[in-house]
Image 1 (cartoon, rainbow, N blue to C red):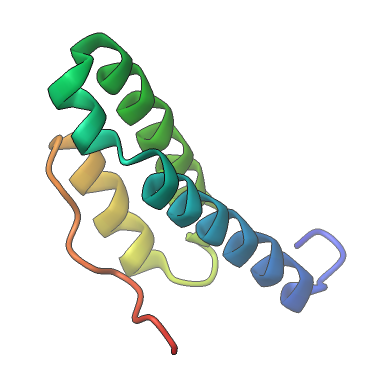
Image 2: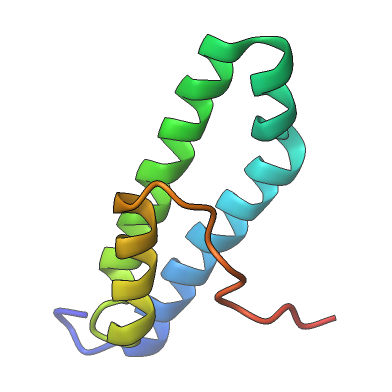
Length: 87
C-alpha cells in the first residue's frame, strides 16, 4: 500500500484468505474440538487471529466487510459467508 501498488496488496490479502481457507478445510477445527477440546480451542484461536489480521488488511479496500469480520470475531460468532467462491 505504501508504494501504491494496490493490486499487489490485494493479491497478498487474497493469498492470506486462501491460506486460511485451506487451513480450515484441512485441519477441520470444529471436528477437532469434539475429539481434543484444548487442541481445538488453540487452533480456533489461531485461525480467528489470522482472520482478524486479514480484516485489518482489508480495511482500506473493503471497510464495511473489514468491520463485519472484526465484530463477528469479537462477538465470538461463526461468520456468515463474506466472500463468494468463484468456481
